[in-house]
Length: 419
Ligand code: UD1
Image 1 (cartoon, protein in one colour):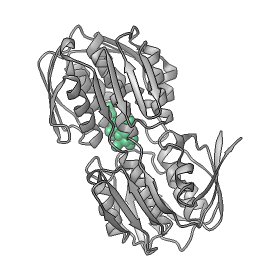
Image 2 (cartoon, helix red, strand yellow; image 1 turned 45 degrees about the vertical axis):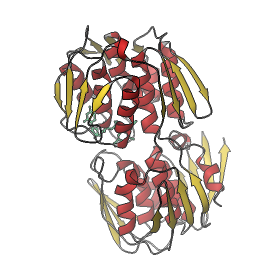
Image 3 (tube, protein in one colour; image 1 turned 90 degrees about the vertical axis):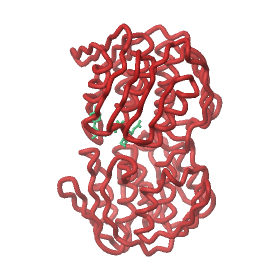
Image 4 (cartoon, protein in one colour; image 1 turned 135 degrees about the vertical axis):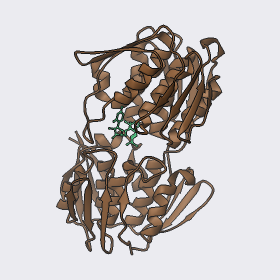
């Protein structure tokens, strides 16, 4: 168990580079299974979740080589199609290999992923989609088995635009016979990145980024090695923008695709944060006069649930009262109790948090309950008047590459303490 000791009050200043996207890298690694050969992914972030996905591929029999931010994956030697309970427990996104394994081998067996800190996160839409592609699904004793000699293209309508279900069905459909259409698909930029990678591999996919994706099935022989550079992480970049705003700093965040950040930028504008947008960078000049704004999380291009806790940290210091409504995950206000310890005035009523801005936050002894809650607490601590201790920073490491080093280079004072 490691913790951060943070002395707040410093304005962040300088340039900070965003790493490659975690949520794009995970499905890209899973997609490597499909071509039964070598793939190269550049700009992969060095994160715990990415390491777990690499372990999973090796467990299945793939050869994985990682040199700094480049990962080479050779899946020609994969033997197993079973994922152990341990790997499913270590990371929920392990379920992203289901579609690709089923598509290539006609069989996959995995333990059912449990609930997680932010919500129950069922798999019904993933399984419904695979069933419609012709898979026989058995759910017994906490294990899911999916089988099909060869999947058949189908017209699939998702009840809601789940990111993971869209990705899994998309990957499964690449090697299916005939055309698959996914309607009410998730439109996140990470899905566009997955489409681009798969098309480089020889898949025939159009429509990612819209709510209708069409996949024309190909055969294994049509697929070839692919080399790809992961898109920048829009959530990491967003976290840095809020870090600059909350510390009244002067920070340029580089390696960003501004369009991917528009849902957040719209709210920062409304909240009176000053920033200028360049081609691949955004410069924030915090002026300390944050205005209250209301936020409702939605799937892309709505406001991202993964930025909700960080924005709550910022709005806890705003002038006025903000209402933040969480519509994606039922249990995503765990940071509220910890922020209250720091002096924030926040009340949760059902799906909404009522955030009354206070003059200042003060340091406290707090705990990160999950990845983005942890990030939000770091931001609150950077703005707080005195010292804060955040326990359980392993959660933060799942999504940010040595966050303390990046922020210390901008003038923050964060020490990682090994218990
Ligand atoms: C992905 C992201 C996560 C982000 C989330 C929402 C990755 C690795 N993770 O997670 O960071 O917070 O999108 O933007 O990319 N649902 C069902 N049935 C299903 C699947 C999902 O009801 O079969 C529900 C979930 O409970 C949730 C909603 O759909 O309420 C959205 O979940 P989903 O988009 O699937 O999120 P993930 O892909 O797990």
